[in-house]
Image (spheres, rainbow, N blue to C red):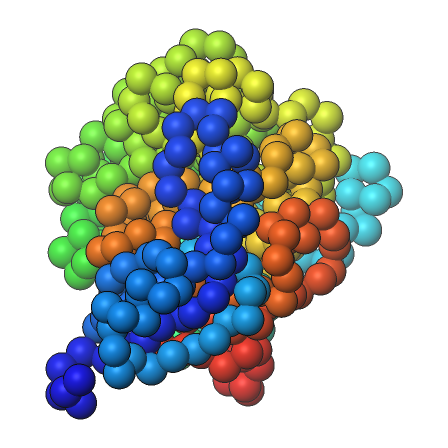
Length: 423
Ligand SMILES: [Zn+2]
């Protein structure tokens, strides 16, 4: 074999959970069948070239660098498809206030909540924002995350939203993982808007979105549709502008009340509708028709002590793909563990192990518009992998606090076992 040309590696003798789409309801059975026999994965030039019986793979790729996985579980690299991981400050004080009985919406209305983080975020430049996020990012990396979505939404001026998005892009340069950004200018009304949400949305549509798009700072546009945030009509205007600029949309929908956010997201062909605690049957049907992903965020459900879970059974019945994410943010979901999110999704929402695993791989990729590029272990896909010190994927879901990662593979390159360098 020539030493020139793309690097070829074989990850040999693994229990390979490909996370391929096995059709509705077939995932658990397909996963069980896949894990019965050891297989090998060949990667050429950062892409998966073949998956198959070890002897056959060895014959097809002679001279490849060989990593014997010794029967460990091999999954696609994990994808956290909904985070607000870039921010200044923290909101530990609000934890005590909520413990004393104050409601999240009341704290938000009194200038706390998102606006408290806005003040802390505006005080930092892009470099300091990126570095402030690194300990949180590293915690996700240590759990096998190879792709991370990061939202803006704590700047709420054009300049500070751009700073947040640049900070997010910088994380992708400081750490071996892919970052996808979402512009979330319609997250909360900033104090200087003087309560005029209409004028704020107008400026966001006519000035901010075109500027962010021109600089290619956002891969998608997100919004928060809620009584304490923006109305469905205002969100619709933002989405119409986003689509005109060629940007896909996502939505924080029906988290605290039913404003028919899921149906609104579906109307704009959203990549995903996220939260969905109060989504009704019409919303579920609309998501199914649009092919949008339902992103479940059990961290926020847990921390806000919510009592109404999203309509998971109806989503499942209608064939809406389910993803799970951390929603990592300093207020309603200070969660830097995607595996913990899986435990919570199983505990509160009844997801099974296969749904959990697909929800942070293939379906999470789809929620970011990346399903043709990554999220499964199939020929042609980007070679982002997580190799685990376990053989049964249930071990990724059933516990709290375990970090059984052996190593990550990012674009075909083997990363060190754990990644905790200083900033
Ligand atoms: Zn969120």
